[in-house]
Length: 360
Ligand SMILES: O=C(O)C(=O)C[C@]1(C(=O)O)C=C[C@@H](O)C=C1
Image (cartoon, rainbow, N blue to C red; front, side, top):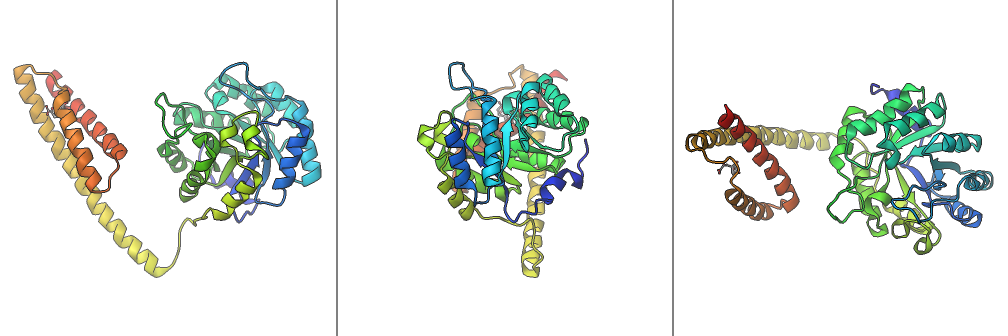
């Protein structure tokens, strides 16, 4: 699959003056709940009304969705409010039922994207459809697996495609439910700038208080849309209670978000930007030059170590460097996380250089 402007035709055709919005409850619970939320979202920026019908849960014994009856409720949503509908599909049977019930947008969940077998089954069942199909990132930060899912659909002549960034599982606890790893989504945009990219801040944050901030970051990074779980009584939701917002909060979030344009033609802005970018080019060049010099010194150390049969890794010295750099970085307004990432990468490269010398 190659990038092409045609990848975003379905989105361009909608002619929106705001990001695409997909909203609705994590799970369809009752007909009354589904319709109540839909009516509250009717006159808003919401373009697609979502509700999970089949819910893949981490452990058995939790609410696993109402099943096919929920599709009847989504049909009613469309009749009563005019909102288009969306749900998650995870196998051929789901796809067939969703298509029979005229669901407008289908998404493939993170736990399905990890399995090429499942994605292929879904792609086969959807062959040639003109419905919109969105692929959530796999639970693990693997860009090829994510794009592989999209390619399997594309090969089955499914052309109204897009991706949803819902974050990645981590072993370590962090402030996020699923770590955003923005770098991966940026890489995806570099490879496929025209593939519509939608953020799911609900699953990234797991916490309604953080949804606005993460959504704003996404808009600052040129995302095309947002999928936000919305419930009339979030605290009583049958699944993912902490991350759902009320329809009123969703409308407020949409009012507060700043939509940034990709570029601006104004002369003064462009002159100043060109000047800053020239400075950045000079600094980047010297960064690479300095790193090259540092590795040359590391090669020298490698030779010394080889001559005395000393181990490459010197943890005590390394920890001293890290501690000092974290303190120096703080003074320059650089976060500890950034310093750690940069210096861990430098250390690894230094070790690789020395390994070559020692083994050579
Ligand atoms: O100080 C050393 O012994 C080095 O080899 C240099 C260096 C570094 O790159 O800073 C590399 C490997 C060691 O683990 C510690 C530090």
